[in-house]
Image (tube, rainbow, N blue to C red):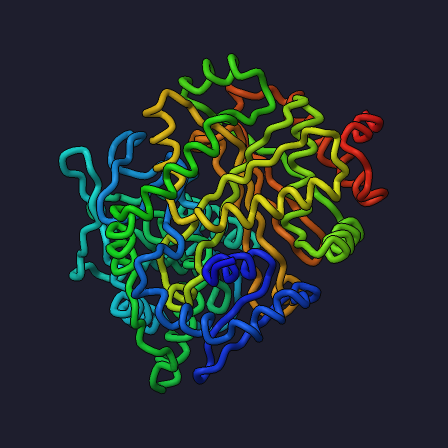
Length: 506
């Protein structure tokens, strides 16, 4: 296995490699480090160090920024097909952090902190212009910091807090003007002398979920350094998102990228559709402007613990277990044996982009055959082999793959799945309270058939299935979710259970 693929697989398994003072270091989730990984780290240490030091200068793409159909394929020049007007509709702005806190807070220091962030990250000063049907990033360095302060009035603290929440929700989902920018925002809503809501958001064109965490964290660090009158502890950013995009455009024109593209189109054209419905209904419904809906699935802490034990026994990750369960649940609905699920990854395997603001999210199509009545354990082994092979070809943007398939007369459609592992922050009870807002009722159409995002927290695993109401009836979604829950319990009961035996719990 190549070093790049090894590092990608390590990250997928929860093992993060980095260089400190010239030495190779790692941190990993409990149980993630295997003897095989330790042996590779020992025997191939010089190669790994060389890759981590020089991957930015290499022309072998290290992961590309890509998105689904209603977002941008992010490099210097791109076509966005499904835009109505020049503003991004609600539902696409998923990158935001909002906290409820108490204490003294200074507006002037926040404005200075944002100004410092604009100096650190040029992409924050971007807008997007259209020319000849293409969209271009445009740097607008003269923009004033995007900061808004609102004071909420009312008779009681409870009524003011309720109004502050309403205002915060409006600001979270407020449209971004792509032509003028800015494509980020920070807001402070005061409802007493010491009570406030602080929020920040980034448009998906310039940032992903990790980016908003970096943005908010560095904003806080800069704020405290300013109010304390001490120098900023942040090191200068030595690599910009625009540099990354430019290097990706160069790589995409290479023969290597074309070879990877051909691999993916040949690999996926034999399984162009994975769905919970007959393909004829899907093809008719896809032309209808969709209205989004969602369904929740919750697996408590005991169930999550049991799934982790199975993952450890099978020498894999909780993500892989959930992916396999997802595929078995689809099979139980449709009896389809060749299945593709498009998985969203962070795409930050290079040391220089791990702490950079930008949209590095990438998608990979994991195709698995369930033919031959395999056991669940055998399905896991098939998925692991698929992941290894996919890692060798992952750099090609999935939108390119869809477009190439379409040029060959093949319409590709598959569910999407994401997974956010838990961390120590999930169990903290002190500090600011993070606020969560519901998605608007109208959600952008999915390029696939539906999408599920799983989040691991201290109370277990929470999954959110987003789908189009013009495509799926509630009864279909409920049936699928019941299959998913039943499959979870069946797997916990017996990981060696054969595929056809999963039908016994219907």
